[in-house]
Image 1 (cartoon, rainbow, N blue to C red):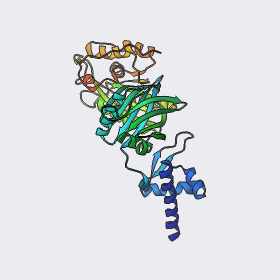
Image 2: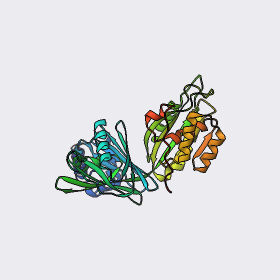
Image 3: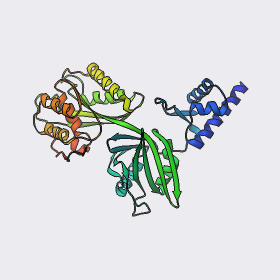
Length: 375
């Protein structure tokens, strides 16, 4: 028994040292550091995970090994997840925080700093920013200047690299917290007086939005509930990060509606090779779980919404549109559309995605229809 306790102490000491030095470790790091077979290293990692001394930071993804960290060596971090999705020359940056106040702080200052960030939204503790690839100089300092901003975003193969400039509290977040957030692969920092600049490296993930409608009957079910279950089901797929669930109101005068005539959409970030599998799983789930045979689903890759799809969503709130119109538009813009009458609301949900809740939930609110993004 004493030998086992001594070995446990040695392995835990090694894991803590690697966590403090690099933020995480792999099975290979323990194998090499302890000079043991790979199976022995994995066994000790598994045992210490069960004891609560070690946590898995990242799952194995293809050739990228799983990464672990000693929990007792982790500093307190407000950053839970940081991940990115790509659509052409645009990137969406997602930062899930433990605190809504911290998310609001970063969102306010990032928006004030400008740089490559074009749009900032906050949904509770989730901060999402839309940025363009490139670099743009920003001024960072004490009040009234912004304390933190994103001055550059670039793509390097399968990676997205954000360059952040900050001071004060945000500098502490960059140097001591962000490297511990799920989804962050590497953080490099340099200090210039009171200002810190750093690069945060994350995976270049694909973005999927799925619209759902007509899954309920007057006697049973609710579209919002089924779409939320779909988000949880697909979000448990390795390599997938669930982003959000939204409800949008459509034309309240449609007589066939089961209640108030709402549709739902869900958002996912996924490794690029998983999009086909996610589509197949979503179709099977809808087939099995919908209370209504009229259910419809729309699946679009990419977060930029073409003008024609936005207009369709707006029309579905003001007038009657039919399934043939929805199918023709979906085919034109590469949206997978499947099902019965519900394809109308499903495509409308995709067309309305990205709008604020004040618009989504008010069927009389005007839908802003911007010009098409350039190719």
